Image (cartoon, rainbow, N blue to C red; front, side, top):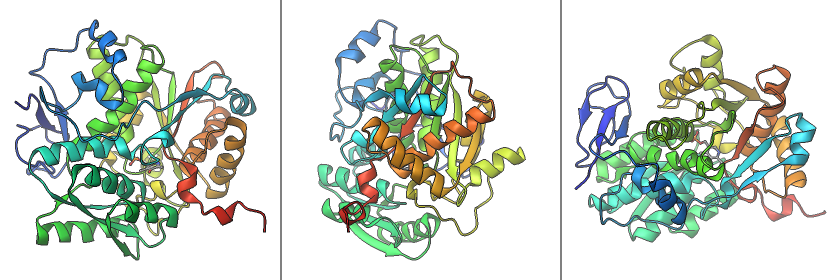
Length: 390
Ligand SMILES: *Cc1c(COP(=O)(O)O)cnc(C)c1O
């Protein structure tokens, strides 16, 4: 028995979990999973969760029915590392990095796609399609391989070649397009309509959020059931931010963490900053960014479907939003990698660069515990020749 329901994040109507939910039929906004019929996880169950492994250890908070097994590659359990040298340089001594590059496919996209493909395959789906800025395509191809199903991936031609090669490596049917992820989304939806393949786009199905929610559950456990004061998240489609905000509320409701909720900060590149622009304008929707470009390909999402939910989480949490230039985030990734031994992606570099900005603006206090996300591994953006001497 599937013991959860879906609540529309826009108009609030509710539906059951059966079938293959996409977005709300009434208002077009994403569904969010709720578990009103499950007994709230008891505080005693924290010990059991601690004994588990991977992201599915948080099963009491996840969309898995009794006796079901997930489609998994061992995602989650990524390192939470202190970064004292970088923290000292940035004036933020209690600085931590969550290294999501340690996931099976090199980025935190593993978490969302493990959850989404699990639910869809259990509902009988054998063929998928998705648009990607890169890393979601790698994860979709790997989890599709794991489940023995097929996936078509639409990606911008300008995506880093190492990422594209990983999609092909796992058996993804890769289609390269001129344009950005929004253009890939149109092609993917057209293909879904004509072929019957299921579209795995961010927030066009409800379960990637639940997978990304484990970012929040896991960091709380790793901090011994406490929250940091601030979280800095490189934001593209926003699934991780929305998912973490949901996780923190669920942890508080269950009494697993009693701290105040963290302040949430989005960072984007100045070359594609629809969320920062909307946040600064006081808007509750983000208008599409024209001619989006950034080397941090995961952040090249000009018109995220989750804009309302992202902006709401930033404001409700007392956080804010920061744009940093590509040169700055690239330099921060390079320097941060040498200081920490963590292979930072450009997105991770953006998160570190935001620390300085927020510090200068007085939005971070020196005593705050600050957690930045390295959402993917740097090697996915490079070719060996980029590093070797001439
Ligand atoms: C997808 C991606 C992001 C953006 O994640 P969202 O949850 O969609 O905002 C950031 N960094 C990397 C490396 C990504 O692959």
